[in-house]
Length: 453
Ligand code: GDP
Ligand code: MG
Image (cartoon, rainbow, N blue to C red; front, side, top):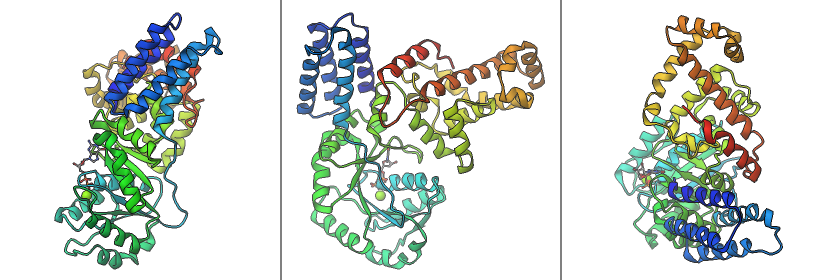
């Protein structure tokens, strides 16, 4: 997701950090790099120009002491990027019933996103129902049904009915039992009068508490006129941007929405049901800058673990007290989330680490081996792996019991150290503020050398 932009931003901050002093040439080179990266991400040219001017000015601000200049410049860069990403306005749920309507053009990702959002809220203890009011394409309700069944979500559709109002009225009574109702509507190639009229009627009968526009990231800056149109015609309350995984133009779409003041609630990052993230500008930027995002990782893990385990896991993550069993559980969750490659951008310091292909492939076999190894350990050893490190005879015993080599046990212990370190260094992270410069440096130093999976 926005890999190129992230790469250049990381290079830019490194350039600033490593500079002996900031001369005009260096600042110009940095500004040029940044401009190229932002324009490639389809960020509006005039925004790019404004940022460049402010960066130049900050670099030569006489009031800032020479020794503080580098930090000052990085802070300005961070603040400027934050300002174009918009404010953090998460989707707020009503205590009573939430009727969330999804709007958008053909193929924007409405139906897919509804199943992702449904899954997201169901996992958090809500009673979710999906309602199919896209009566134009015969396959639309069938698609909604399949996605709902796959994710164990309640759904209400009527494949034969051609009037969306009748479908709504037919199920209105049944829907009282749910606190989150996700309404799928039909798209068009453009926002034409026919679509506006249809949506207006559906809105009148269903009285949505939120109307969310779904757009694809690949339209880039064009998200601005499109969301303005939907805002004017249909009073939409927020946006979800899909396909952030498959285009370089996501930066344009995000900043364009910020310009229209439409809050981006979620972003879609793939076709699978867990490929959805709440959009939080500050943690998004931290990740883009390669500093990882522990909060997003916790959220992701939460979405694939059942409720009972959640509290326990979160506590252990925060305290940094993991047992070997937790470590294996963690790696398993990562696999469920689409593999380590996807998750690594969320772990502080791992963003830019290169991980050999064959290591990713062998994760599954490794997990199986580790689970086997755990069976040969005593309870004490599992909860306090330091014992194993202190007495190598224990390692030999476990290896023999599990029928594997001692190096396999050591690799599990390494994994344990790594996760513990990562979690400890991120535990004073406040997602509303992002990472401080000091935290960033500390983490970069710590993980720069030792990433070996
Ligand atoms: P709708 O016409 O707005 O209901 O769009 P659909 O939900 O049917 O989605 C259209 C296509 O986009 C499908 O093939 C989805 O799998 C795909 N899609 C949706 N969201 C994402 C995403 O975040 N990333 C990727 N790569 N594909 C997506
Ligand atoms: Mg659809």
